[in-house]
Every structure is written in C-alpha cells, then in structure tokens.
Image (tube, rainbow, N blue to C red; front, top):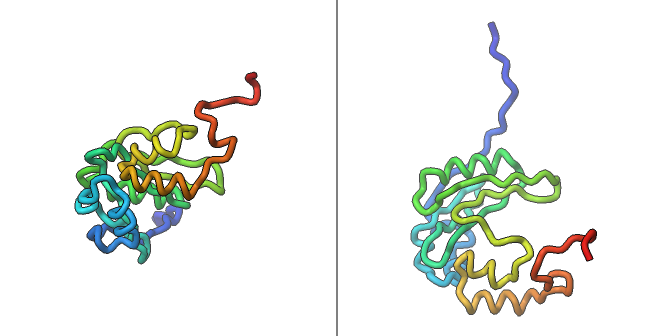
Length: 153
C-alpha cells in the first residue's frame, strides 16, 4: 500500500554563530548591554543569517518576524534548545499582509505604548532609543497613550 501524504515544504533553516548575522553590528551598537550579542545566535533562513538576541540584563523579550507560518514554527523549534530564549511562542497573524512572529521572554508591552517603553523592554540603550524617537516622530494618532475605541466617547 502506498503512503501518500501531503507534501511538506522544506526550509533551509539552521543556527550559526551570532557574528555571522547580517545585523550583528546593528544590535551590538544599540543594546544597553552590547555583550549580550555574544550569547545570541544567527538564524540562517535559506542563506540569510539574522540575529536572534536572547533575554538578559535589561532585555526582557525578543522576537523575529516571518512571512510563512511554517517558517516561524521551524525557527521556534530551532530556538527551543537555546539558552536565553524562554517562553518561546509563535504569534500567528490571521492577515495575509502581516508577518507571523516568534517571540520569547516576557510578553511585549501593549501596542499603544510609547516607543521608549518598547525600546527599554527590548534592552536598547537610552541613546539608541532617543535616536529612534527623533527619526520616527509620532503622529497625533500614535501619540495616544491608551487604547481607544470608536464606540466610546
């Protein structure tokens, strides 16, 4: 009897040393504790290695985004045995134009929080946070600090 199963996409994903990641210097130069990148790993997707920075020090959580859910699940499985990546989870996006994320550590702040809150949560230095905020001014809508609903007044 033939065993016919639905084809499963195979992805060329693997872990490699952190220093091989394209964005290694980007993170190292912006984190409050740059040495944490020495405990990071590069996630190679096909041939592109991207840095997965663990929690530690002021860094409470982390994430990586992927367009394919199966890719996100594969990366979650790869990071599962790595130190510094507690509470791994995949946040599935029901929208075609929004990426799925692999998250670790504490849950991220609510979406409406200030960029400074996010920067501190992800362990960026105060200088890096200030530079980001200067380069990305908030719009009047994004300046609202609490959730709102069109049905409330």
